[in-house]
Image (cartoon, rainbow, N blue to C red; front, side):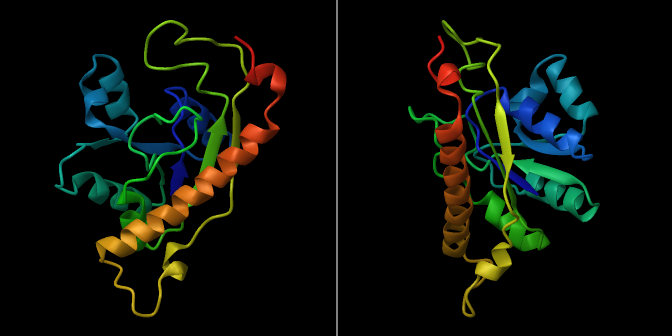
Length: 191
């Protein structure tokens, strides 16, 4: 299972490229609205991506992700649930689905971050597409969230999910800051 920061609409492409280069084919948890867009929706279904009904608590997306992980597939999660709204580009607070999925499947979370994508492709407006900048991707060591459980912690406790989600988000944030700080100045300030 891969947990990623989400700074741009380009991130799924950059993350897919990195995973395919590593010999893996990703399945993303993606908002169900994308599946309703002509052509995009057909592509999402054809690539067997996993729709998430945001705000719904039916659990179907987590069950589909659990089945994919059990089959040995790579599932990519953007724990923020949307593109970051922070001015500094750092990750926001994460949703607890990442922790619940990791605990339910006993699959470690591998952090993957990118930097440089935000200026390339945003939702809309002036300057929303500015190609020709490098997008850096980094992968960290897997985090076994089960190892973070205390002896008396209940893996079904929502507070435990929140604490473990913060562990994942702090890891992503630390990795993003590292990429940001090493990103070439000429690209960071280019218009």
